[in-house]
Image (cartoon, rainbow, N blue to C red; front, side, top):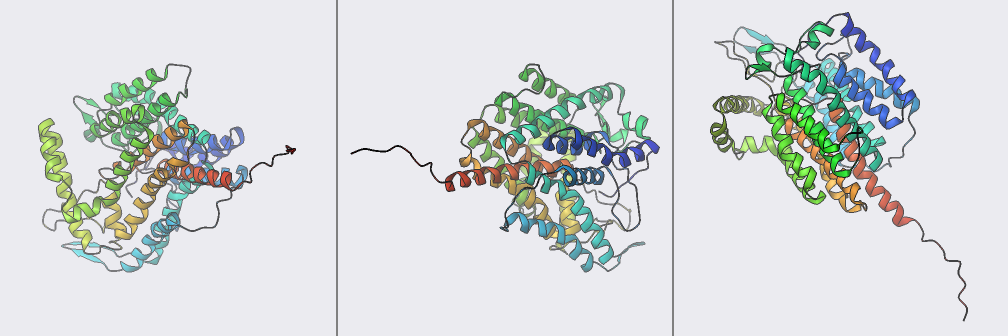
Length: 468
C-alpha cells in the first residue's frame, strides 16, 4: 500500500492540475456528473503509485487529488442537503475506521528486532498521518451518500461506470497487442512488473492502474453495470445495449484475469435476468462473506481445502497460486493474533520476516493488510462501511415502488458486494470504490426518507359539498 515510484514531470503536472480540472467539470456539468468524472477520471487517467511528498502531510497522489477535486467542487458548487441528526451504524463504523489507526500508532511505539533487522515503532505523529490518509480516502463515501439519493443519480453512476469501461477498452486493446507500455511512455515509469503481467504468451493490460488485476476488475464492474443498464433499457451510446455489454465482456476475456472474468460471468446473468429480491439475497451473501472472512479463517471454518481441490481440477498453476495465498494468510493471521484488536501499525510491522532467508510475507488482500496494520477494530470499521450499504439497500427494497428503481438498487448492490469480496484476494480500493459504496447507501436512505415523507404528508382535502 505504501510502495511508491518516481515519474516524470508529466506525472507530477497531471497530479497538480487535477483539482483545477475537477473545478472545470463542476462548472460545466450537473453536480452528480461532475462528481462521477472528477473521481473516475482520476482513477482512469492519473499515474498510479506516483506521490508528491511534503513533510507532515499525507502523500499527494491520484487518490488524494481526486478527493481534493471533489471537495473543492462540492464546496463551491454543491447544494446543501439535509441529512438529519440521528447517529447510527454508519457513523459508528466511520469512527472505528478513522480512530483505529490513531489508537494503533499510540500502542505500537516499540521497536521490533528480527535477526539483524530492526523495524522502528510508530507513535502519535504517524497516527495523525494515518488518520488524515483515512479521511482523504473515505471522503467520497460521504459525498456519495449525500448527493446520490434518487434513481436518476443511480443511473448516472452506472452510466459513468459503463462509459468509463468503454473508454478504457481502447488503451487496453492497445496494450494487449503491444504490451503494457502506456504508463511508461506517458508518465515515465511502470507501476507493476512485466513478469507479473505476462499471461499465456501475452500480457494483461495495465494502462494507468496499479496492475493488471486492478484494471481487469474495473472492467468487470463495467460489464456488470452495462448488464444493469441493458435490463433497465437505459442507453449509454446510440448502439444496441446488448452489443455493448458483449463487447465489454470480450475485452475482459482478453485481459486474462480469471477472478475478474468469474465475477462478470457469474454475476452478469444474475443482474440481467434474476429478480431484484433474488439479486439482493446474493449481494447479502457476498457481503457476509467479506465481513466474516477473518472470523471464518481464524476459526478454520472457511473451506480452503475444497477450494484448492476445485482449483486443481481446472488449472494446476492456479491451484499452486491459491495454496501459496492461503499459506501466506495463515502465517500472517498467526502474527496478527498477537495484537488482534488494534494491530501492529504501518511500515511493514504487520509482515512476517524469516531471520535466516530474509523472506518477507506477501500482503495481497486488503483484509489482511487492514487486519495486520489496524487490527480487528480497523477491519470492522472499513469492511463494515463496505458492506453496510448492501444491508441497507436490502432493507430499503420494499420502499421502491417502481420496478426500475428496484432493478437499479439491486444491481448497484451486486457491484458493491462484488467489490467488497474483491478486497479479500486483492487490494483495489480507491476513492471510486468509496463513491460507489456511499452512493448505494444514499439510494437506500433516499428511498426510506421519500416514503416516510409521503406517508407523513396530509391527505388532500376534498372540496366537494355533499347535500342531504
